[in-house]
Length: 171
Image (cartoon, rainbow, N blue to C red; front, side, top):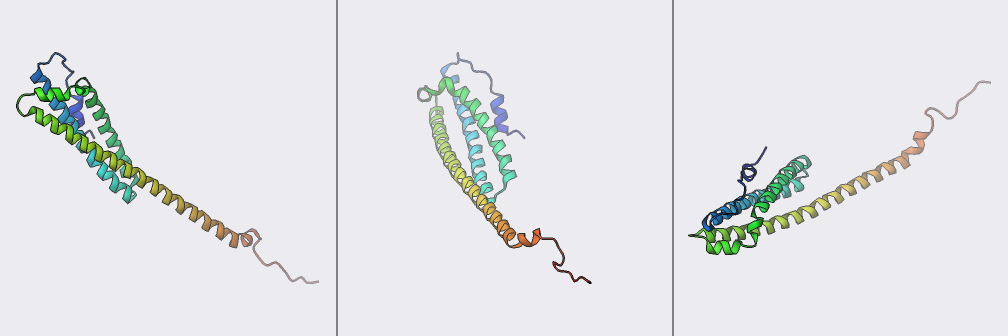
C-alpha cells in the first residue's frame, strides 16, 4: 500500500530553473512541506518500531521496515528536488513575500528536530535489537546446555539394549 505523501513525491513536476523568485519560493516551500510530511511519517514509524521490538513482533517489524524504506526513498526524491536550492534556502526565505519565508524557516527547523528524534530512536532500536539478539542467544545456549545435561544422565541407559541383562538358562 502506497502512502499518500509518497504519491505526491512521484507526481512532482520537473524543475523549472527559470522560475521567478515568488514562484521559486512557493516551489521550495511545497518541497519543504513534502519533506516535513515524510519525516513526520518516518517519525511515527520509528515510534511504532520501538514498540514492535519491545513486543518481539518480528513479522510486523519487518513489514514496518519495508514501509519505512518507501518513506526513505521518497525523502531521497524530495532531497534531489531540493538539491538545486539547498545552498540558497536561507536567501530564498529572506526574499520570499509575506509569511512564506518564516514558513520555510519553520519547516527547516521542524525537519531538523524530526531528523534528530528519528536518529535517536533508531540508535535506541539498534541497541534494543542487539539486546534481544543476545537474550535469545542466551536462551538457546541454556536450552542446548539442558539437552546436553539430560543426555549425560540418560544417554548411557539409552545406548544399552533394552531388556534384562541376565537370563536364567536351563541346563
